[in-house]
Image (cartoon, rainbow, N blue to C red; front, top):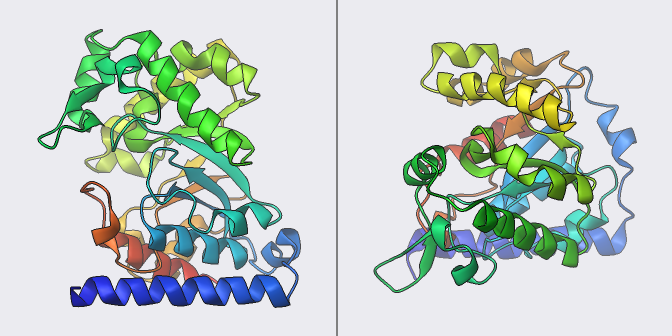
Length: 293
């Protein structure tokens, strides 16, 4: 076994033992009392639960510290169940569906989501890469029925695991594309999901992520039309995680904001079922967030 993989395996095993021991010997702290120690720092949203064990353990650790209060879950990931019972047991944690049609494999029957998929070199049906899926949706080459089935199967899987989904966001911000929310509107309301992420942050206009802001502004109109709510967003970038004081200054006083993060307690990216473009900086995010107190 490669050294890095062995190290990650040991860290994950040790983390599980520590968290399990804590759960067995001491009662879980009340979230509100923990969060009260974080003066003017809003609790964070952690994305991508399920991608690797270390992502899950990192999110769980930050949740137990009172630093994370919302967790966005990817239903179609191989590590979804790792640490899940510990997370569900925590008080004050909201769960969201990180709707995903740009990474990995479908939860349901591939034949029923065919316009979202391609057959890879190993004969596996996988979701199309981000650029291709975006292009297909905007040019009308994705079946609305297929998209709705993908949403239902992912949401149903999380619900069967005892997770109460309170809000919606998506991997690679797919839900920002015009028409996606309207396509899913009745399904969202039926599931009593009334809050949707709008990742508009004025600082993004000066970055390569400026298109996110443009799509977010368009999304607000669609959300109003369909009766959904959203909260203001703070979207820290890589430079904001270089020093704890920098991140703290950015988010301090933003009560009521959603602060988007992608932490991981270690670099176990060999555990990814498929390659992902955002890897090494996840550990840096985790390290910086732990120093916010």
